Image (cartoon, rainbow, N blue to C red; front, side, top):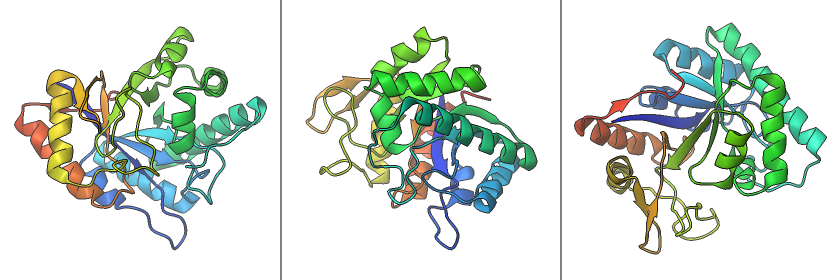
Length: 252
């Protein structure tokens, strides 16, 4: 049983600190590093990339809508030319910083509202796909497991990595519970670990309404900005290893 653990890192900005990158990098196998559009400043991003390189953690570009004020969690209507260029710009910037840090960008994972929008919106999904094709079609795209984007990206020839969320509630249709609703974000390390063990063993998660949702996922995300993120990632890693799982990046 091989599984990837990923987390959103590099999100601190100036004097404002978000999460504990050093602690998370000791636990995960892949780091989704902010590219400056939803969070992250150049010096902080570079420091996270260097720490990831030292730990041997694979690095991905965590691309976003241009939304620093909203942390990339506000849905946006954006012209195709602007979205495509924004994605290319962010990946390119992270590639430059990664080279300086002694590593390289190995995949792309959209962030927040963009991630959720392209899971169901074909127009914006095609824009993100086109951006990868224009820059580097070999970069895997990390997407919400079971979403429409899986098919669109594969049809376009991209490698798709389906992902599940350890610390987010699920609806019966396999979508994530919106953050504004009760039960959207989970905080209990033992409960988080137990539901991801269920995923690893059975390929299912229990939705917030008690129904069982079938999910096929290569990667599990623990959000770096969630309260208690380190404790959740630590407990999840311990439980997976105790079950004989191998924690490795899909991009290794």
